[in-house]
Image (cartoon, rainbow, N blue to C red; front, side):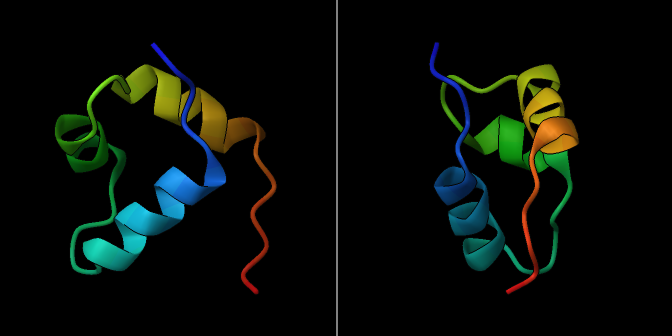
Length: 49
């Protein structure tokens, strides 16, 4: 199982602008669990730019 990346998360947000929670992202992403995505986002510094 690979780790989520900033690119994975940004592509998800761009493709799904109405529902940007972790649960649908995990449901539609092969290989990512909700906990893995949550841990990544908790430690990631993603600037708004």
